[in-house]
Image (cartoon, rainbow, N blue to C red; front, side, top):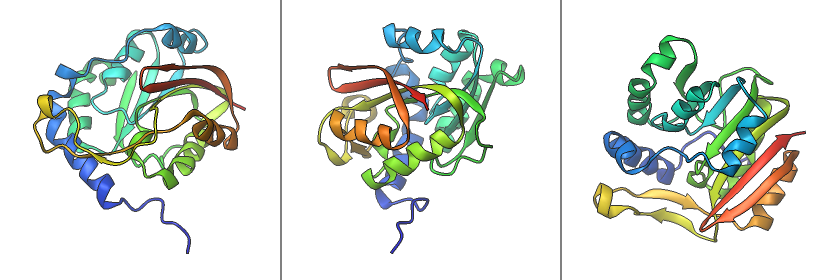
Length: 213
């Protein structure tokens, strides 16, 4: 029987509901991605280009991208997070420099070979493991040849529902978390012909800069 990649599991639905509940608080306790060495490795190769923000949430990283001169399209499945993002990115959206849309990242309703680059910060961890490769294939589909991507994903072997950050969001925010060991995640990247530009592990997060070959 062929796996149904687009149907949301009960765990995925709970994860979306959790993000819907904490959207108003999210940016207060989760600052945007920092401008670290990897950020500059990524941005220096793509100045002024069109970027896809995979799992954009409240648009905090999309805003930073627009501040650095990029045009950005963000996709997410949480209505509340996207609503917050449209508030935060209102000026950029009005100028045509940002656009947010609700979309499953396994079926992005945009044309192939559209984007010069993408960011995907701790988004793939919320997918069941069997959906990770199809998601990477769909991301690859919308990228131009030679596009650059910045991916971060938790390091480890965890797989299941996790009720983290309870001190910040209360005790009822279960989310699906799948962490990865480098050999396994590296293999997925190779299967979709993503070449490696840079890699590092910082604490419990793996960071990759990749190129679409």
